[in-house]
Amino acid sequence: MKKVSIIIPVYNMEDWVESGIKCITEQTYENLEIIIIDDGSKDGSYMKCLAEADKDRRIAVFGKNNEGPGAARNLALRKATGDYIYFFDIDDYLEKNAIEKFVRYMENENTDLVVCSFSMFDGEKVFRTVKKADGLKRTGGDARKDYYEHMFMYGERGIQGAAWFKLYKTDIIRKNGIEFPKLRKSEDDVFVARYVNCIDSFYMTGDVLCRYYVNSYKRFWDKYRFDIFDTSRQSTMYVKDIVLSWNRNNKDVLQRIYDDYFHKTFGSFCFLFNPNLKLNRKARYSRLKEITDIFMDDISCDGIEINHPIFKCMKKKNYRAIYVRIVLHIWKHKFD
Image 1 (cartoon, rainbow, N blue to C red):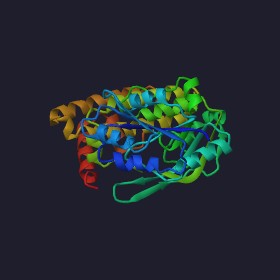
Image 2: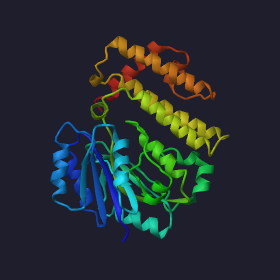
Image 3: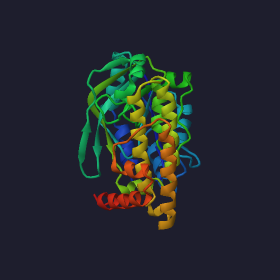
C-alpha cells in the first residue's frame, strides 16, 4: 500500500486544529504520514497540534518562523516520505474516503495528477458545488497545448488555482525541483502550474471529496494582515511565464491570465480597507492610485481589455470613482 503524505500548514488557527486533524486521522486510507508545520503561530495552535500528535503516531509537528504557507509547505515537502502528496488547509474538510479514492484513481488510471470535485462552505451551509468532468483523462502535452479550459479553478475542467483539490506524485515534485514560491498569498497557483509543466497525464473525477471554507471579509482580513497586491502580482507573473511558454500565441489564455490578475487586483483594492492595516483615507487613496497605475502598465503591454466597470475607471485613471465603487462593494458584501 502506497504511503500518502498529508501536508498541513498552520498559522493562528487554534480553533480549527482539532476538527481539521480529526478529518485526516479518520480517513479510511490508513497508510498516512501527517506533517504539520506551525508557521510561527502567536496563539495556541502549536500546542494544540502537539496534543493531537500525542494521540496518533502518524502525526509529526514542526515549528518555524513565520514566512507564509508556501515556505511551510516547502519545509514539509523536504520531510515527506510518502509516495503521494496531499495539501490540506486546517479549516477545510475531507470526506472520510477521500484519500482512498484519490489513490485508487491515481493507480487505476496510471496518471500523475488527480483532480477532484469540491464544495464551498460559508460557515453555515454549503452554497456551491464545483463538479469536475467525471472520467476526463488527458495527456500533459494536450493539456498544456490547450490550457485555456483548465485555467479557471471553478470550471468543469479547471486545474489551476488552489492546491488542495488534487493529489500529486512525490517523485515528480522531487525530480523536477518543484516548490512553492516564497509568497504569502496566491502561491498555490504557481506550484500547480509548475507541476502541470512536468506531468504526462492527469485524471478528473466527479466525486466531491473536499469542502472549502470560503473566507468572509472578516476572516480574510484577519488571515492576511498585509498589503496583498505585490504578492498577487508576482504570482500572476510567475504563472504567465509558465503558461505562455506552452501557449505563446493563444490570446484566450492571455485573456484568462489577465482576468484573474484583475480579480486579484480588485481584491487588493478591497483589502486596503482592512482595519488591521491601519491606513487612513489619504494613505488608502494613494495606494489605490499606485496599484491602478502598476496594473495598467502591466496590462497595456499586451493590449488586453477587461469587461468590468471598475476596469473602465482604471483605464481612465478615474481614481475617485474606483475608490467610491470599492467602498460601496465592501459595504454591500461585508455583512453577507
